[in-house]
Length: 234
Ligand code: APR
Image 1 (cartoon, rainbow, N blue to C red):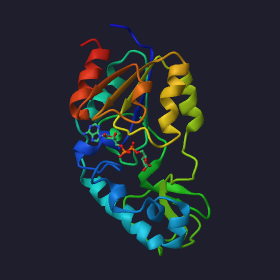
Image 2 (image 1 turned 90 degrees about the horizontal axis):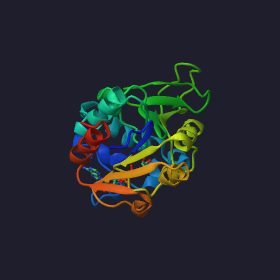
Image 3 (image 1 turned 60 degrees about the vertical axis):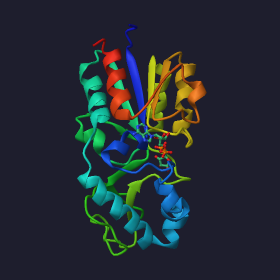
């Protein structure tokens, strides 16, 4: 078994599917029920902020009840037991990596449990509903509060840190993502450039499947613990 030093893990909605949180592009996925232009773009939010707030308020409520699954727990175990570096980069805005014990997952698409004031830029933990009347606790403005999540057309968070990690990693693991949304979908190419071994753990081959040196297809709660044990030499 090869010993890897620096591991980067990218996760997507598929890792939280078995915790009861919806994915986006599967047959009854979130984007088959909501028009992403209405709830996941700055223009949509501007057009109808209350509708977008209700979308995120509903997801925040479901997120509060959700529990981490064996895949989240396996990645937390990898972080604890692997002698080298492990960086978890997630596209997910849920908190299941943290609930599983992961120290500092990098939320490149932001976090549902945080709110941002688009007037003064203050971001804070926010577990309640947001409405157009919610006033910013910092600057007092109403109609400026939004979920601190990255919408289409906006710059994902922590890109510098992510690219530095990708250019130094020797193992890149992608879990539960369709590989359709950039920049995350391009991370495997960056890892390959760095000479890393690349592994896809997904229910089915993703759009980027051919770029991976190794794959294990099946539910994340099965394939992720199995692969983590393989890496830890269990
Ligand atoms: N186990 C493993 N993989 C699964 C499971 C499961 N139980 N269920 C679904 N999947 C896989 C699907 O096969 C699919 O490849 O998870 C992937 C989910 O893909 P998407 O729904 O496109 O979600 P994701 O890739 O995370 O979307 C990326 O798009 O809408 C934006 O910002 C949003 O972060 C999101 C981004």
